[in-house]
Length: 395
Image 1 (cartoon, rainbow, N blue to C red):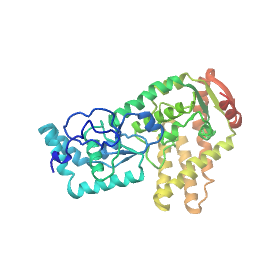
Image 2 (image 1 turned 90 degrees about the horizontal axis):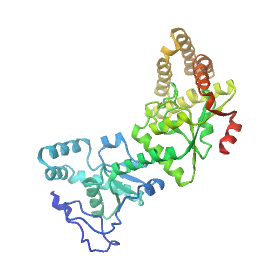
Image 3 (image 1 turned 120 degrees about the vertical axis):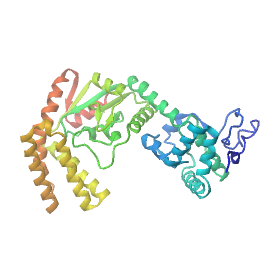
Image 4 (image 1 turned 30 degrees about the vertical axis):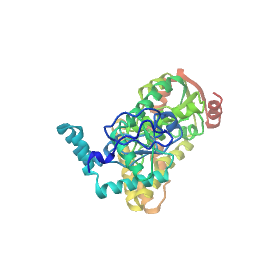
């Protein structure tokens, strides 16, 4: 196969209503509007348009666009070979090599996968990194198979810049309230009931505390930023002028808050959520133990799931051992191991309340109380969940 197999661009004088997707050659530039290309990034994202990402898997893993599915033109090894060829022999040699690598059965299998995606998502769009050769090749091959499909001009790079602009411009443009409170007061539960709520921990895939790691891995930093930006974009469309976020540090697990958002949060007024100690213990029991154990079992099976769940708790405790000190860590470890033993033998989880109560008394409550005193001047309201919810809805 050679580059000539892609043919030439269609006649630029042809009607735009019937013009097929362009062929990926070095032919002349088209003129006039092209119905098979779009740069309306905001509309695509706000409408949750299905997206076909044809970049290599290694590129996709670093970051992708929301609702994108990766069905690459070239796998990682093929992309690497083509990249080396480009450096050593130039563009045309790299194109020829790529066509040779993705030929025959390999080409047909990849086209079949793209066709299945197009059939399932007829309103979608495709993209590559810069909206260049790879997306044009995929678009042309799909058109040859009878499935013309639009592509995104500028590709992933252009849409990422658009989303970063949404963060830089959208955050300062909104008034912001920070929701604080001791561990276990149910801040996230309350936040998701608000039209103005922005669930940072939900997008980060982490509950924010030392025990907050989830079974599924966190998103990449880029994907985290993209989802925050998309939230701002959609709330702007819905005319939500205010944001409420949970009080967080600069990092939620491995995901860093965008500086523009973190800095805004440090100056924003604070609403403090309160709840009874027993309620907080029960809420943490569900979050740290019951729900998390069920997640492990659902994904890994009963035996392996419990073993990894127990190891997760041990590692989480080890992560704060230096701040707890040796004596308190040892006491907590003994309480935790006793609870895990009863859970493994009898399926009972109430024993976990003991180490949770100790953890709150000895670690979380002193830390959060100290932080609340430091932020006292910014606290504009205190109350239990119903009162706080009414107050925030009235903003």
